[in-house]
Image 1 (cartoon, rainbow, N blue to C red):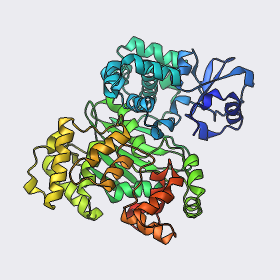
Image 2: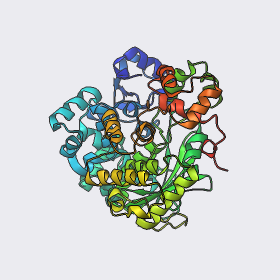
Image 3: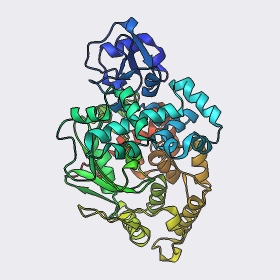
Image 4: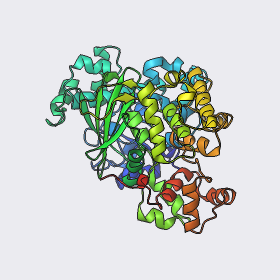
Amino acid sequence: MRQGMYTDAERCVRAVRSKDARFDGWFYTAVLTTGVYCRPSCPAVPPRPEHMVFHPSAAACQQAGFRACKRCRPDTSPGSPEWNVRADLVARAMRLVADGVVDREGVTGLAARLGCSTRQIERQLLAELGAGPLALARAQRAQTARLLVETTNLPMADVAFAAGFSSVRTFNDTVREVFAFSPSELRARAPKHAAAATPGVITLRLPFRAPLHPDNLFGHLAATAVPGVEEWRDGAYRRTLRLPYGHGIVALAPRPDHIACRLALSDPRDLTVAISRCRRLLDLDADPVAVDEQLRADPALAPLVDKAPGRRVPRTVDEAEFAVRAVLGQQVSTAAARTHAARLVTAHGTPVDDPEGGLTHLFPTPEHLAALDPDALAMPRTRRTTLTTLVRRLADGDLRLGADSDWPETRAALLALPGVGPWTADVIAMRALGDPDAFLPTDLGVRRAALALGLPSTPSALTTRAAAWRPWRAYAVQYLWATDSHPINVLPA
């Protein structure tokens, strides 16, 4: 863990001098002599140590009066892995900021979701990140604005409001302050091929920390894809997105040094949220070096890690959707789970138009599913009860699943539902809530892999052995699953 690393100036200087991209997003380097801030891997000649000051966030650099480096573009670096590892108030707040809550609901809305006062959340964010929620949201708006300016032909006024600015003047002033260019100058400097050839489609690159092994990540998403909502086409995973202001369709394709992303949005104001959810889906802000280092220390896992380092946990863009699908998948095959989900989509999903064909619906919300007839579900009575209870609790707001969920509390709430056992609760914690330490000792695939590797195969004994893998047991599950020849482990042709 590198929590608070920016306070260790000596370590930061070493990272900057080595241009180590693994530290991008962990801290930012502000250069006193030039007034710019950079990512640690900036290709420019490193300044002298006495001319460097380190900050925990881009927003803190901007508040201190520094502008973004034009060479390394620190606003495009991967996000800090801390927010995916931790479940405390600050981490939950940062996940909500990334999901655009401050722009939509203000600081009071952020505090209400977290069950604390605005003063408390402002104080904690300022203490740890050097910036409050408004400054953090402003930095995010600036990054979104730059993406829209450089990758679309939208008029600048439309860019301003799509990025979340309240006025064109504020948009212009912020862009100049952060990037030292006007919006028009940024667009003029952008590569001529940056603008999408298809109107309404935004093309961008999603960065990640290397290594990234895509086989199980995209293989899992493709093998479990719900017809009408998801598909694998032309080397990319495509799916529909339900977003705050409308809907979207995204195509994500693995590349050696980035994820190629094509977004078609019904409302450009959803760009920030869509990017955040896609990054979360693919676990792009993970720190694979820290994960693999811990797991490699176990002789049983070391060969698996060495064979395919950088495995990620396939997650979700919609926590409630995944919970429903997890219940549908209880004790049935992958194909059967897809069939059950497809029937719900056809009967209760929201139709959408896909210019490329193939995708037809948004996955139904809990509110849409609350009206379903249990007798129409072709599954055992006990599982019907589990599904309808889950949907009702989600629709009523009694159970909340989201980026701000408290992992232990939510897991306990799930286990209190009829028919939800440890496997269902833990797979939801792993893939929907993003808990990196969620573990599935009762999973058949995990137990078979453990037996083949000479590990204990009974749940209690395996859990005891897996204590050495903490806090990365969810990643250990990916390595264990990968020992099987199941299609989830294979990148589709």
